[in-house]
Image (tube, rainbow, N blue to C red):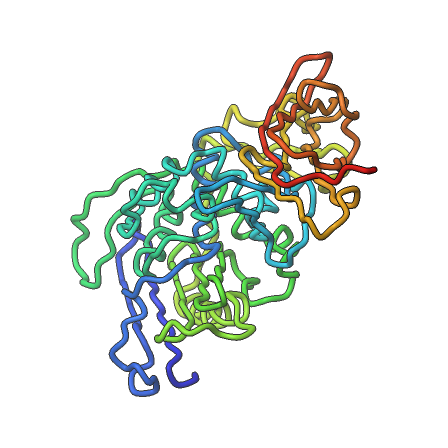
Length: 416
């Protein structure tokens, strides 16, 4: 361990069994900051908040593990400007299932889900999980809340994962032994908690981003998630078996960035070592499905993903074995509402283009610009901008399905 770099580890039995919490807050004299408590320090959690977002969407019947979400370019207007989330590898994968989006930690689907759920609702649910540092409304944190823009502690984060391991039941962590007299709160349903746990244990769905062989692939059942904050200042790995929940933070106590150290390369190997030790000493098994979930065969249209059996909350499973694409929900992906586009006076105006992009649900629709038909929706459309305020719509049979407003600033050259 390098001087100044600290690891925080916390492991415990879930509340449904006898409690034994252990916290290691630092490396002591091996560190340049021996008194720094990494377990209680506030840091940005990166993607480790995603399971709590998707569990909320599942509980509200907004998504299932087989729901298809777009991993495509996205622009969201925010007070500080336009927010354009990117995946870690800066690529886009098109349509993916929610299972793949969560297991492979894709950013754009998470941001879309946060927009669907509502940032205020998500922030309130995080507070119910014990994240007391979220004192503002959801809009203050913006869409990046789903990617870990809030400050949390390792203590809080591990207890939130412990809540999922306990079937959605939350209780306070404690370091003392004895009779458990704590009250519990049902933050998530046992069914939603199980579905999320099953996704976090899915090695195959995780392979889209992480591959099959990594420190998350245990030889026993475990559910696990990594996270990396901006500039790699913090990386995390938190996961659980049916008996233990373990969380690891790796970073510099000074808050300085690290180089080429992510949750999968920094925190995950330590997490795996602790989990292996606990498994070898106490053994572990798989979390059992609750009564109100069902395993149903799903076939995805257009071979988006291979057919599989998927877990659903009862009454949310598809009516047929083939999942259909949602043609009834067309969306304008770009430009987003409120976008301001500035023409560059040093570039010939005819070579400046604005991309009009629509979701797959906009098939057989037409672009309308300022109420006039422009072109059929067939992939991205390149429009030569003209100054002024504009209204862009998607329409079918003359009826507007989705509308956005944007403006172009600057002077367009006039040919002599």
